[in-house]
Length: 193
Image (cartoon, rainbow, N blue to C red; front, side, top):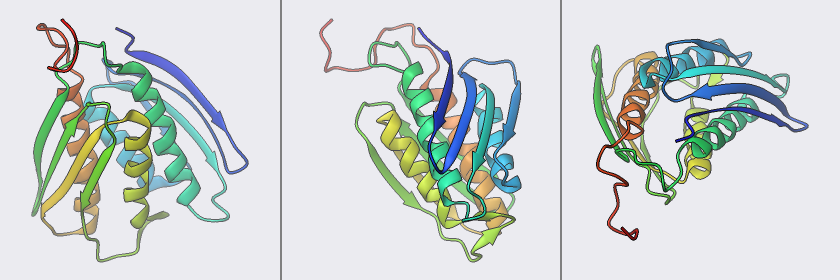
């Protein structure tokens, strides 16, 4: 199973480089130019158990949208290259994460079918340099590239910082479960045996 790779993507809006290892040792470096987004990506990587090196240089003089969306595209492509349909992983991941007053649920199916459902409401427009509407754009881009089914639900809302952080931590834990290696072969009834 291929579980690590390097990646690079350069457009007129962003220049992204880095590497990923799904079964890492906790080595994480994230530099996107958006402090709160760095914090969220670092939290996701840490709780998924992966190693991640990520450098993003984006057109932040315009706004944060291109940086956040393109990061989702590149991380999605990197994850997709590590998880193909012949990889014997558990495939499904589910986690419910409390963060103080906030309770978040994330469910994942590495099904090869792209579907995204997102139930999260924020009361602020931004935290630091991150427009909170772009969290959805990050996951939309990632889901398209991985061809995964992803449901994100904030079951009990609260402080916007807690909500955003709980989404990324919970996604990390659910992904860790989904990509954990299965001893019983490919988890699907659709493939020939």
